[in-house]
Length: 301
Image (cartoon, one colour):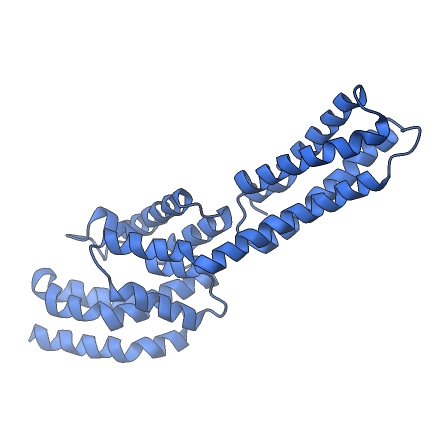
């Protein structure tokens, strides 16, 4: 569990319970005890919905399902400790209004999670906005990004919107900072490139209302797309390389060779091929790798 989920689940779960508890103490002096729960319920619904829509950062239904279980467990346990055991209500505690309270505590996160999922799927808004942002940063479309998305979807079964965003935006640092005179074989620069790119796209997603899960996933992928890491980071790295040999290798061999020289271009081709983590993915890239390596040798002569 990450820190954001612990904050959303345990932090807000406790705060919401505490608000209800405090309201119960206040209304105890104003309304008959049997009516306290019914008076608090509509207030609690409004507050809980506000928290779910404004403060909770999840963007998948599973996130809200886990939230529902934890919030309900918090409510049941703390009610038992601080009301049933501590206050010992004379006429008992577990009545219809209490069961309705537990039901709503469980159901409201599910409703909000479903609603966010529905509208996300209906619009694919974040992915389209990412395409616009990246294209604008590079002053036009780059086939390399489209083909990186294509290969990532081939390599990763069940690729999500976050995976596609990471694939399309993996080189965003170059678009924002500029592509001229880049040290594309300098390992320290490549580390900077991927980490800075992760921060740039993370801030963009946050500004455009992405949930914390999507932001963290995209940043995680982009932050290691040059060197790989876990299975999903390796898939993005491989997709980047396969796409490179389809779309960018001709530019390096035909345009950059006179500027950067043989050794640097050969190093770039070798680096992009040798880093591919999967032998299956290497087989896909090999034809174009060998094609442009031979073309480079011909230019050298």
